[in-house]
Amino acid sequence: MRKFGLIGFPLGHSFSKKYFTEKFHKEGIQNCRFDLYEIEKASQLSEILKNNPELEGLSVTIPHKQAVIPLMDELDPACAAIGAVNCIRVKDGKLKGYNTDYIGFKESLENWLEEKPQAALILGTGGASKAVKKALEDLEIPFQFVSRSASPTSLSYEDLHAHPEIMEQNPLLINCTPLGTFPKTDAMPNIPVAHLSSKSQVYDLVYNPSITKLMQACLDCGGKAKNGLEMLEGQAEAAWKIWNS
Image (tube, rainbow, N blue to C red; front, side, top):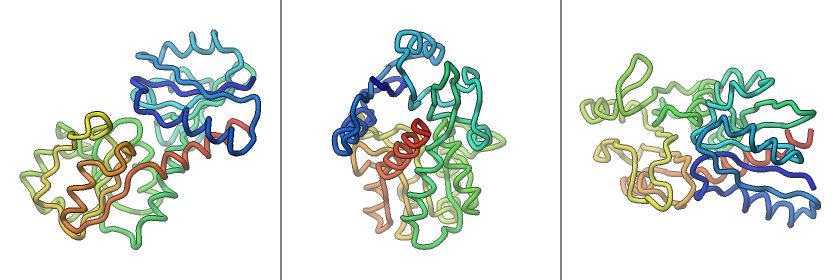
């Protein structure tokens, strides 16, 4: 039996097990299974591997995308440049880290955008934001990070409230935080909603619910919004190719 899985914490929101189980069934892929491994600390990965010697590949989600890096025997060069791992290939007892978030997001964003936006705001600075950053750089879309506290490399949400022109100058908003994910669907990043407009575009990496509170706020202003399901499907298919390479 070939085994694959997902590590993260918590995993109640994960779509991966359902996605891969359905993929195996639809495509007639036999002797494969995909399991969830909910671990609070990335260091628990060694225990999972010890107890599951059949594992050939793992997906990695919040909050371990950066924490697993020191545990890898090798990093794919593109993954090393991004600075986050969301896919691990297990082969001959060695772990190699990849980033398929980048592939899924970049392709999905390109398909969605009708024209290149003036600039973007990346909401959040966690592991997923690293892939988004690299994709925007490669698409030559200027961007700024936004986090709870201002720093030399990011604005704060207070900055957005104090300077309305920032929202106008950066019409593309990409939510890389888990805010708004089921079951806490009333949550959203602390942006000044009043400064959203018909020119605003929200790409929310959250996919459950299909329309988040942030997305709805943008739609209510006549803007465009997209959830992260297509990105997830794209990164999952890229991971499958890596595991079978």
